[in-house]
Image 1 (cartoon, rainbow, N blue to C red):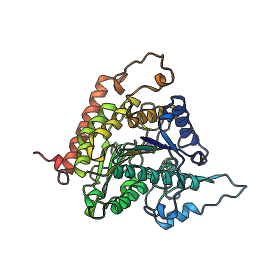
Image 2 (spheres, helix red, strand yellow):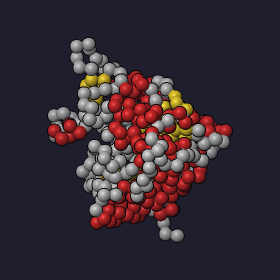
Image 3 (cartoon, rainbow, N blue to C red):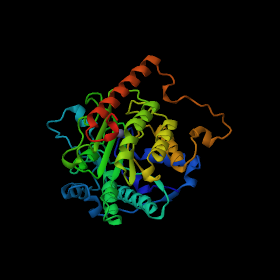
Image 4 (cartoon, rainbow, N blue to C red):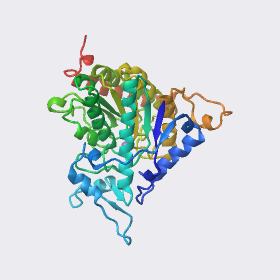
Length: 402
Ligand SMILES: [Zn+2]
């Protein structure tokens, strides 16, 4: 059973620039799911509003009240930018890249986004009790993975997936009070940007293992964090896994190698009770922000690999929407992920809406790429995989020579 969460209140979080994080993203996803009839195959829920206590699972009370108490007068613009960077010290570039906005209905949209994630956790954990393996996709906004304990940034006000992960750990402690090995949650963040917020929140935790793939290029890509060397601290050492891509044009086969060689081995050793995915679609070919080459078919394969490659979760997987800024491309990517969650084979969106159309099986993302460029990308990703393994081998036996 696959459940999706969608609530129109999430369209009411709105700034002035429609190029980036805007309601049209979610509208495109829903219209694609309706046109393709994929929505009919899912249970659709509206989610509930999270409480202050839910938000405080991962955020400071100062941060909550800063966002919660924001007032808009009738005469003023109905949104404001709230930058983490000091506007006096920040460069113009920093300001333009870190313009996170809050609007009149942002708090309501945030509460429903978080509440939907918590319902998603309850849904997969319920499956844990009765032996089913339900999965789901929370189609929410604002996104969350850049928001730290005490900050809003990168379009993110609160860290939806981090709150979901902490809530899941707490629920698992109640379900299995005598078995700490069952209190584990793995977060895989495949957004093109590093989830600095999720990393910061769980940096000292051995209960939530955070694994992120992201464009890095020696700290030249927002949010300039996510180095291999950032592996967690104290009892959380080894449970923060960064897989930073040094080059653009990373595609389907590269992601699948990373999943097979790093994520699946770590997940099987860690043995989480559930996997949460920070699902960003700015890794897709044609996205206006990311510069990678993942296709809808690749996203289907990545999701399927997580569902089948980590037997201990028995299919308990919850995706949470993060980035993705080219609306139709984003929506087609969500269709790919959803088909995998439903257990359906991949069918391109064009064929779903027009079954008479001839299906051309394109060989993933390397179409149109100069073979020499593809070779260089592959070599660079392989080098990153080896470095990650070497760096983490003291903490993960799967990376030690047998
Ligand atoms: Zn992103």
